[in-house]
Image 1 (cartoon, rainbow, N blue to C red):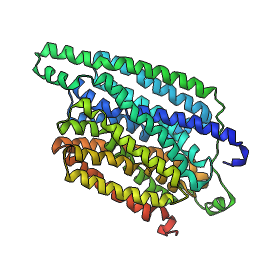
Image 2 (image 1 turned 45 degrees about the vertical axis):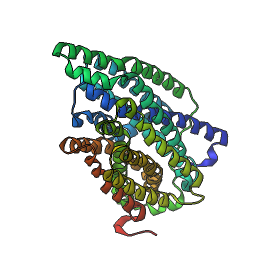
Image 3 (image 1 turned 90 degrees about the vertical axis):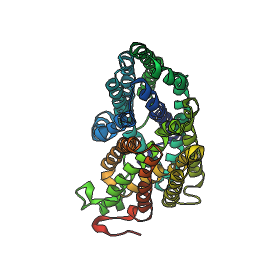
Image 4 (image 1 turned 120 degrees about the horizontal axis):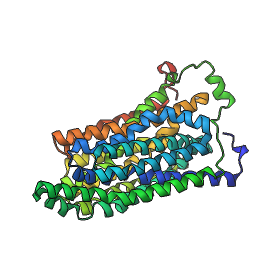
Length: 425
């Protein structure tokens, strides 16, 4: 967009609105960390089936990214965001019959609808933030949004966990000793704990959709300056931008390891013999690490280091912390998994602007592909769950190590790739 078209107050107002949306992203997204152990008990699931929670939520991004771009093209940013919030409210309401009938398929359907609404919101919000200002400071702006996301993400599992995981450790022991009919009644009662929280979430989302609809959120357009336009004049396909394609794959892996670090840590703590009443706080530790990283990004990018260097350091930290988690156990191992939040914090803010650089008129399509890459949060945690069943939840973390090496490659070389395999220095 052309910054001259908007006054500073309008831009600041837009950033506040988008910040509120990122708060919603974080709150709804990180509820999965307590839904996994909760539904594992309530619906009597193994690890693989329990991680269908994150699969159903994140696979919606892969399926809905391109349709989301179509929706935004027809409705514009403001109306599209309102539609996304309504979809999220509908998905939350599906939890009510899911809890009443204790039907896992209904829970997964509700999560998929929630994710579909978020796909529309993310498709609008991320390029908006990247374009709204100088390209070299895009990571700083996205880091600010990450703080809104992270604060909500740290709060969400604690708030929901205090309701649905109350006395879950003792209840699990009692359920195992009950005769069949009493066991089924106890599980039904447990499942219904989720009804009131999700009624409240639905109401809040509907109110926010009305607020967004009547807001003065302006439209933005991808900047297509003369240099970018001429450089891309001969381009006919999005696949002629290898730095974007590799960036999409890198973002796919990044989202996967971020979701594993945040959503598996509660269940992992329980597998290490730690009570769920304590383990429910572990996701907040991971998100707190992310918040620290976001603050560093806001202060230091691009004044003290570039987003490329931020991505390099983040990938190296990811390798170190994940290997350390594999080599230790108990609270020490859990601490290193929580530290992955710090390692992951500047990856999204760095990968996104690097991947959409120089796309010109292909920026919107490139952004849709990057939103599709959020599907990594569906696939990798499910693979983690399979490894956890086959081996142990501890050993299953080996899946994240090669992912961090790929992210390191993108930070060093991959983002420089241009058509024909040439490296642009």
